[in-house]
Amino acid sequence: MKITKICCLGAGYVGGPTMAVIAQKCPHIQVTVVDLNEERILEWNDEDTNNIPIYEPGLSQIVGESRGRNLFFSTEVDKAIDEAQIIFISVNTPTKTYGKGKGMAADLKHIELCARQIAKVAKDDKIVVEKSTLPVRTAEAIKSILDSTGNGLKFQILSNPEFLAEGSAIQDLLNPDRILIGGDTSAEGEKAIQALVDIYRNWVSPEKILTTNVWSSELSKLTANAFLAQRISSINAMSELCEKTGADVNEVAKAIGMDSRIGSKFLRASVGFGGSCFQKDILNLVYISKSYGLNEVADYWEQVIIMNDHQKRRFSDNMLKTLYNTAANKKIAFLGWAFKKDTNDTRESAAIYVADDLINEKAKIVVYDPKVSRKKILADLDYLETRTSEENENSVITFDNPYLSCEKAHAIAILTEWDEFVQYDWQRIYDNMEKPAFVFDGRNILNKVELESIGFRYQGIGQ
Ligand code: NAD
Ligand code: UDX
Image 1 (spheres, protein in one colour):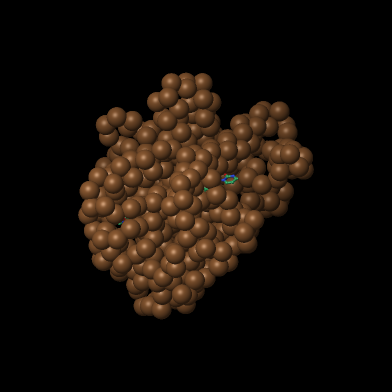
Image 2 (spheres, helix red, strand yellow):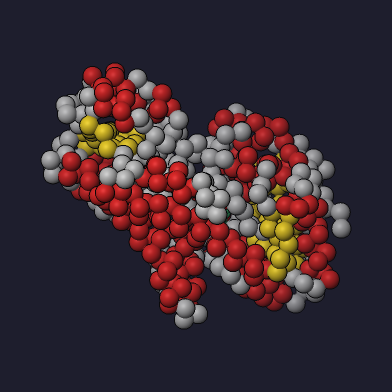
């Protein structure tokens, strides 16, 4: 089957970058990305590609290159579905906030809406690709909806989970560790798998393209995220023990990472992992395990989240304790609000929870993040519903200059590992702070010896 037109439902952190890279690498394919959110589509179509809604290194250039040629952003969902041979579903699948499975299960309402929309609009056979992260066996539900119309059309459902990490999305998409495609084992299933393999073959070598059955593919995505998050909770657990024993978690991480069976990546102790994926996907895994009666499996994975919550809380508790058990009316400068560097995404960022704890202690939080707006910071705090919007507004000050943010501060907390923080003139910052001047480095990016020689009281994680 020669593929010339594809579309993607959902122009978010996954749909946008993924489709932009496919469009760049496959100039012979027309790629349309659609979303119900008009504002988001308007931003994707902004004349100045620096104003696209997602900040990712390299993304605006790639969009600039392909947009209007073979890459289109639109709100015309039906038209895009009608024209496409392959439809990617890349909508959000957040943790449910209501009903059965509240706080645990993945909310599949957007996925189901997409399936119903495709069923309603399609006039010819389609390949439907799950790009969103989904509970194992979701393809069954999608197929059941698509097959229920009685119009005789044939749909093939593939699972093609996305492994990109934010902040390095473009590099991850251009040089993936692997592409995973799960599909039906029938002849039609094989044909659909091949059609998708052929798209990736435009830039990915064949040995990196792995095909499996649908359920293995769906479950592999949840498994990968669970393993990655577990490494962080494991090193964070050791960081607490390091603080009690005089060991240094950076040295421990290096020592164990040199064991090739363990490997050195993803062992950075921190204030706790954030992002839209790890917590949501592990909670989902816990929920699925419980639903099969696998309580030990569920408890095992839930511990990763419990440890992460503990790490975030431990950070704010420690700040309070060090600040002589009172933060009331003290100015605390936050460097960073995003959940990691090189992204404007703040979903589940540890900064939100640390700020919330400190505002409860009546601290004034002054935030500087190179890519996150005041509006977003306040929305993140409001979402917790700890206090009124007005109270949040009065508790948070924002500047677009780091030196101003730190002026007259009693303490600085590093919440995101932005490279620029390391380059700052720390002497200048020290000179303008209240004394004693504390630095709580939630990312272990600053040089303890250097900061202490300036006069700072420095505390990292696990040191
Ligand atoms: P997102 O919230 O940034 O984007 C989802 C978009 O889908 C939104 O713009 C929303 O308006 C749109 N949408 C919702 N329902 C729609 C519908 N019926 N039709 C058209 N558009 C619709 O989410 P995201 O971060 O891009 O994540 C999408 C999926 O990919 C999730 O399942 C997530 O778990 C998974 N994932 C995310 C990442 C990541 O780093 N963000 C990485 C891998 C996988
Ligand atoms: C993650 C997965 O890495 C990616 O494969 C998947 O597709 C989506 O979920 P993402 O959440 O975008 O990607 O970023 P990631 O680099 O995994 O970082 C997640 C969180 O863990 C961040 O808050 C980061 O700061 C933190 N982290 C990461 C650590 O605290 N220590 C580490 O060693 C690595």
